[in-house]
Length: 183
Image (cartoon, rainbow, N blue to C red):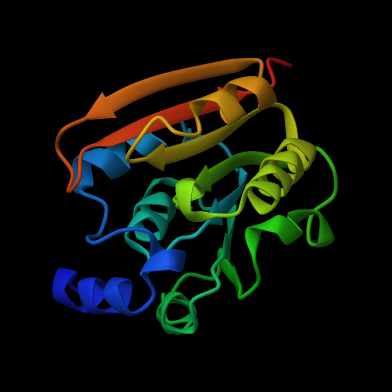
């Protein structure tokens, strides 16, 4: 999917997409740089859209890893299902249903492109709670956003929250790396 196709879909479904352009290569690199490639991992991706971060994750992940994507937009779901990688599993359900699919403390990384600022507060809090629940000790929740609006929620939910910023995206973005501080 190219930028123009993504833009058209984003305009049609802006509330669920929350973006006007695909994530830039530099933003993607910054978002997933903490994900190691030398060992098998279980990774969840929330709101993968057309799969630009998904593809980068699959390129980075160890061959023994699994990546499970949660996407509610049917156009994006079909696009993701066409990616030729058996490590990828796509669920067309909301991110607030993680614990229906994963046991507690069974996931190494949750990588999120969800437009948190556009999600109702109670749903957003449930997504964070379920992400905490499925993350293993030492696991990380990685999120990018265009504003610091939800910094407080993440700071209240995780023991460690690091924030970085990149201008090399449309629009510029903040990248959060969150953990419960257990190892």
